[in-house]
Length: 360
Image 1 (tube, rainbow, N blue to C red):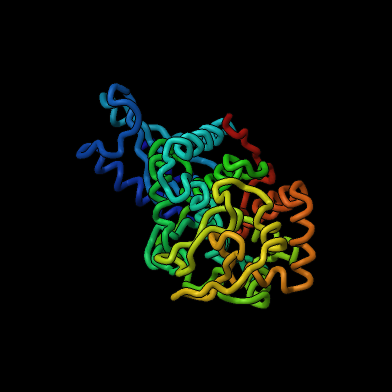
Image 2: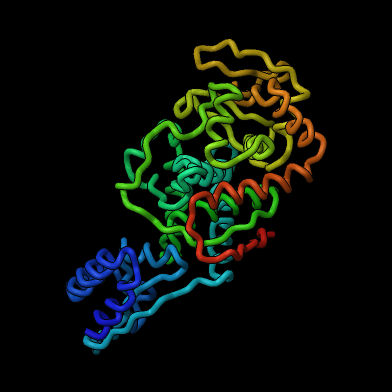
């Protein structure tokens, strides 16, 4: 009863108090019948019980709640809250970086680009509305259908599955924090800029899944770009900077319908996207697929209609030219706007951000 009384006091201050208390009782009752919730080494004398929705509520503010008891003293339990430090998050970062190095059999030799896309979509799919302050990267609801089946999220199961071993090794981190931290890690490990990050996102259930159609459509024009991004609170300069992430990765016909990479080095972060947009001649590709553009020189690269809109629109083109000339400026602006994207709509309880050391 000591743990239950303690839990009552903890949950009384939480908006999720009913969920936390009920989940804890269910787990406590089932403990004697199953050890599948046990953590740590089989030789350990302590058994940790981690529970779902209630834990997510506490993790969202940086704490990981669990009950522990000794097998020979099951009556005596005590509540603990694990508050991860920067060093703990650095360990998560390092584990992601290690997997990126080891698993090099995806696409052009790296899971990095699809990890960046996951971080982008888990933040942008749940579209932040500046007027209502709703949405953002909170939730990680792409774990569930129908959001996981949205057309814009096609292929992202590969990224989510890639990160599952990390979640298993560090069960205290929420999926929302894990996916966004992984995006930061992927960019830095692909020679990109240092990006500040902070924890505090909570996971939500299927009821919070968003409707399809909230991400930019690559087949549209500059008006569509502004309509989508301005709702998130971005200005023209930030829109162009974010578009620079197209230096990474490629399109797939079985996902977006488009085909090919934007740059010759799709696993290296650079300003090549902007230099190619300006310096290469782009012609409509003749093929049995959606409208896209092909470089005249190698015929191996592609640009989407939304990419070409950045050089057709005068205001956008000005930023493209600046980033093509000055990679340091692009890196600085991208670092700031990507950090902003990952934080949209998150009710953080701390203003302090972390920076992580890339691996050697």
